[in-house]
Image (cartoon, rainbow, N blue to C red):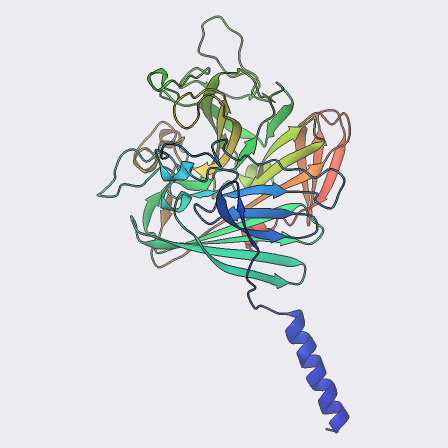
Length: 411
């Protein structure tokens, strides 16, 4: 080989190494609404993740446009000095966070006593930095659990020119049955009916079987406990003779906090991922989530419209949790792992984790700009690398989304 050929080969090797650079870079950091956070960004999206609890918010979609969109909630007590929070998850409470075990966890199980939504929702995560691989940028964080020994790795990825967030949580060493899932929480406007909700086909929905909002704690609910129904637009209320609640139009029923759960149909039955959409009609965007219902079998709605008056809520909280989970409502480990009203009906309410076999939960969230008159989503169509949202008024919007990631875990 000549000297010039050897030099050319060396140059090619250097270019290949640069193009496939897998070195981790230190992420940008910022204190946002009192919480030290790490940032991940592309020209289209910027997201912040709190070091405590791993809560993802704020997130700015369409940041390179004239109308950026920030759909996620941040709790109103941030930046305040006052009494200590009653549970750790409330300290950073905002946006989307992973829960393990999902729920209140008020009862211990086999010597384990987990805080609400698990240690990982209120303890410190460690950043391993960001990596750029072609158009994909990934932020990685980890946390070790103590109540039940294990490790959780959070990977959040953005793809250039997309307004989509790809989440992967890998659970290692955490053996036994456990409810888990995503606690995606959106900020709600005060104007009634301006957010329109739609979900992929579901077997049925049910309001929380027991008391969700306790008047003894200065909390109030409006939906009939334990009611079972098949339409989001016809959900029984607690007052006899009053019309059903339409949960496709929120906010509504000021002064109440309610909890419901949808049991998703399978991927095979609907020929695609399960989906949830919230159309912000006054802002011109829709938010969406996509999941594999074999992994996250249900969606819990936390409908909070100024219905809690104890500390730290103080009657000012207005948000909507659209929480894709495998769990029995928000009751936690004990209720989700024993026989319950959902499991009796064949609904999976806990996942079986194995200490020697990692479990991965893949999830997608994103935003799409909508035209005037879009109203709300009727159906969602999936083609390779694309998602089309079809409205009740016949309008369509399409977005690049690697929905195949839900099963492959690859981008």
